[in-house]
Length: 248
Image 1 (cartoon, helix red, strand yellow):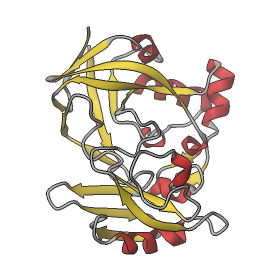
Image 2 (image 1 turned 135 degrees about the horizontal axis):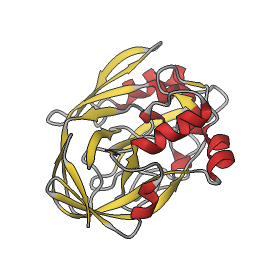
Image 3 (image 1 turned 90 degrees about the vertical axis):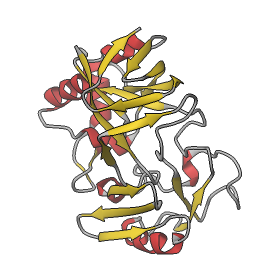
């Protein structure tokens, strides 16, 4: 039996992960409040966010590994986010209204040689994910265990910045789901494509330090650098931890 084991969102792109007990998925939309905000840097190719833009315009874990160690807790009613980092401490901020405070908190965590954090951006109705499509990522716990086994170390699921983690699939079986539909709770998702990974996944989300060459291990042992899949919600509905997952 396949079950939903983790639900994870990232309220601010590359700045904090948060585990949830449940979520309400909407047809044609990303996971609620996932990548709702993004921090734009000084070398961004736009002056005002009016449409989706590629990830190189924003702060990212691949360029600033310290960001990977930030955890988040969002109060969706007040739109205030509490961020915690093992060295920088904690900050509670409303990104819509207190962007400069967030930028100031992030600045010491961002490499000095990179274009500096400039402002917090938000585009209503558009998650600032790596693709403009309203993807929800679906990943398998068995694949994470299989990769960890060949590397000889435990790998946190938060290296992968995924949304929905499934338990009960065989390792890498999520790739076989492309083109299929998944019934999870009351929602239905269509699995669309594999996710090719970057060096941000080499970073330990507890320390913000690169300590596992995930890309080399994927290539050496499995012949690719892919982990997880992208899906789209085709039927709205609530999902919760422990929900049975049915392949349609």
